[in-house]
Length: 120
Image (cartoon, rainbow, N blue to C red; front, side):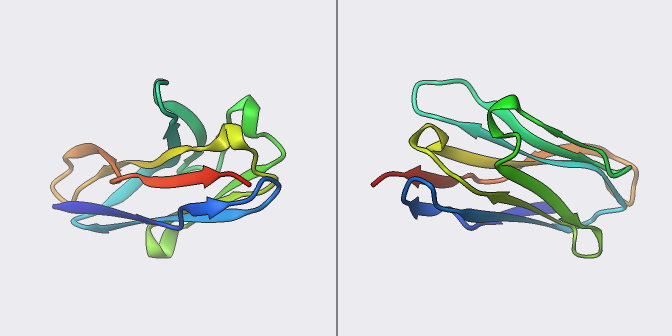
């Protein structure tokens, strides 16, 4: 069994910063990708940033230059550093991990979500 635990959301003023963390634990053989999605009220879930095993990263256009995704492979942890936040960034942020277990079952997992609110 594998678990994802997210942390780091909260209330921040426009222009401020937050860092989200997501730790994967349990029966993990290898991790293919780790990423962040978000879902704002009344909108569909959308990709924010993705980090692949080879080290490549992809960002949504609306966060380029403001957000940075990084990974600590030894800790099975992915981070999202969010700078220059604006009210449009208000959403529930979800961690997404694609991995293989020790029995070579391939899983796509979602975190429980963490709320980020950008407001004065």
